[in-house]
Length: 428
Image 1 (cartoon, rainbow, N blue to C red):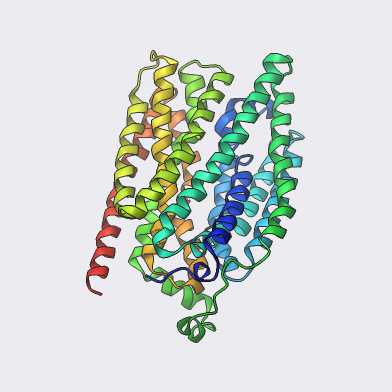
Image 2 (image 1 turned 60 degrees about the vertical axis):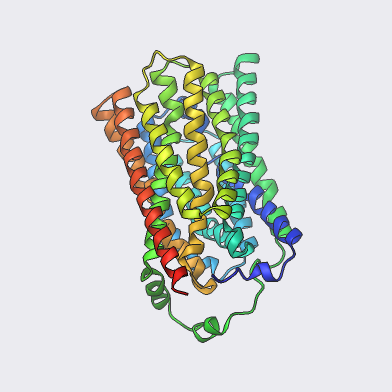
């Protein structure tokens, strides 16, 4: 396979330094957008909205993501990552300032649409392309594992601070939920605004530094639709998309753990926050270990095994009785967290198996993201519909079991991709 272009120009130290910057930037842009992961019930209370309304805002976020993934890939092939990422942090941070005022539900919709543009259009494909170009072919697993695990470590540290702050202001000082939540929002907002200029100046040179290959030069004037046709014609691209789709659905299940534990198992907001923060600490461990395992064993094989194990763990959580203790519940949540984060740490490494030219790699990332992250659109509504039709634990159980079944289908897609890659390698 073709080695990433930047890896031939940069030293190991330089590549890992740039990766570290990408990790820090990526670890700071999403936590505020997905604040529900640790504070869903508190958000509902502070903003005076219902869980259904909150899910609706996340549906809008998902719609914007879906609409912008392909344009995001197109931008990533033409604009420097430092420009795109710096703008994203600044824009998302300014929206966070607005979010901290606890605006109306109508204004919240605009904020989530803006976050969709910041994290989708100008950020996502630039991040993934920058990472894949930094890594050599045999390093894709570990680089993506470090990226996802590292950003997970950043998120876990921030979440630990946020939950501790929230507990201090509510339990220690007796402040109400809204006042404590505003301070948490400012923690995340301040970090994004601080990092916006830092990212711009540290990522001061293009990640991709190699001159175009002869093939890229001959096709440099090709049209968008010709490039898109080239990407869509590869079966590996579609299988990669299915792997990410089903793996991301398994991860999406964890977003509802906070409400599930608080409403169905009767845990306090602080206890729930503590458990979900503990789950976040599984991300650096799971993602990094899966990435290295994928490089030393086989990316697709490791991914398939992880999807099977994650599906079993999620189905187990769905059927657990509400009488189980907090310790056992914590253990199951940590297992699900470890498995889903391990999947996230490796599923983008399958992009290398698609053998996509660097010239259109951003576009390929956009196409795969469009397929893989479409759950952002329909899973909030599916969650709403199931909880409305089957209130309480039954609705959650059906929801989790559906996602577990889809995870098994993802394992089959990963295995099929493994067979295709092996066949092509054997024919060379």
